[in-house]
Amino acid sequence: MRTKRFFGMILIAAMGGFVALFAHTKLVDRPRIAVSAENPAASFAAFRGAPGNNPVDFTYAAEKSVHSVVHVKVTAMERGSSSSNNPFFDFFFGNPYSESKPQPVSGYGSGVIISNDGYIVTNNHVIESADEIEVTLNDKRHYKAEVVGRDPETDLAVIRIKEKDLPFITYGNSDELKIGEWVLAVGNPYNLTSTVTAGIVSAKARNLNLLSGGGQSRERNNATIESFIQTDAAVNPGNSGGALVNTRGELVGINTAIASPTGSYIGNSFAIPVTIVKKVVADLIEYGKVQRALLGVEIKDVDSELAKDEGLDKIEGVYVGRVREDGAAAKAGIKKGDVILSVNGTKVNSPSELQEQVSKYRPNDKVEIVINRENKEKQISVTLRNIDGNTKMVDKDEVATLLGAKFVEASQSEKSKLGIKNGVKVINVGTGKLRSAGVEKDFIIISVNNQPVNTVDDLKQIVSGIKGGVYIEGIYPNGLVSYYAFGI
Image 1 (cartoon, one colour):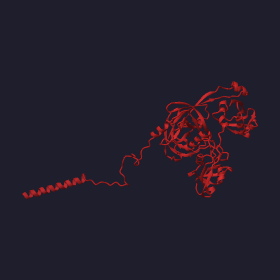
Image 2: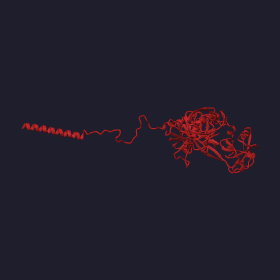
Image 3: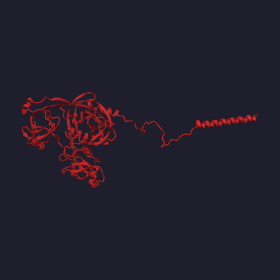
Image 4: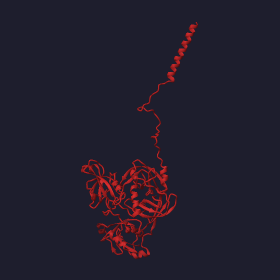
């Protein structure tokens, strides 16, 4: 009896063990599924980034640059007709026949302080028609500004206020900008002062034909230079002349234009690279005039069609279509049909890129240019020249600065249409004596102090020899004969 009970207890214990083992196997010690790289486990879609990469922080760049960007207000007098047919009467008593009295017109833009003693860079189109310029700092101090120099070919200008210890911005390097890199636009859109917007570099070396108004990619005397940085940072009217800065708060461009059918920002904005800005600003401060170096060539893009026609093995560089006889390229041995590949080690693949690189230098500077000639690379040392074909620095044009205008000889068709035998046409009117007197763009100067004007040199020679009153006779394209008088 006891034996049966003993074996019964053992059987019950064994069955309990089997039950416990079965339960543990099914409910606790479940087999684990290995996760391989080919079959990753599901997770939330949050991206933590690579080790050591921090989110982009714009606060440092904004704080560093916003105090160096100023508000620029320009005031110009809008004038009516100023013809009384008596220059002496006009000079001493004014013009009673004027259609309307001059009315002040205001415009607004931005500027960037580049030195602690008051030098400010802005766009030429912001201040070129100004009779008066007022600068407001970020701390709301107001100053009258004077024009140091203007360069319509790059749409840059330098103005100055009389103050010291100003917060100024440091130059960066626009050549080092990468497509996709973050940048900030700092300025005063729609008079909203100290505005900062962010975007990325969308493209470089854009040529919009904004300054020249034409599509010819050629180097010529006083050629405009366009090699814009394109970004998607919001830029609107009032931003012109403001700063484009990198995430370190360094100046990499001057905001200048937008591409928009509405006149307001729709996604693309354009800035002048700081490599061009530095050179132009330095020249205007030191010489009052840009010392523009030229290669003396006509150039165009290399595309697949040109490469095929010229037997080029690669679609790269800038094609030389013509070489000026007295230019720097001809003197160095560059020929028509050569393809320029680089300037001082910087590759160029468009006319605007080549112009940007050459614009960094002054006449008599030597650059190393690599060309492709008959599908063989060759390095050539070129000593750059000025617009007159020599290596001298160009003196400041005192007469043009005094008059505040640019001139060209009137064409034969214009003279025939207006019934005149001679004349010099005013193609741009900025701050100076002509604007103050009421002269407008496209006015053709026939004589100065009763001396006929046939060429631009005639005009400069006559005006430079005058001390006292200047009396100008001329005609507008609509046939209106006008007289102007002013003192120097």
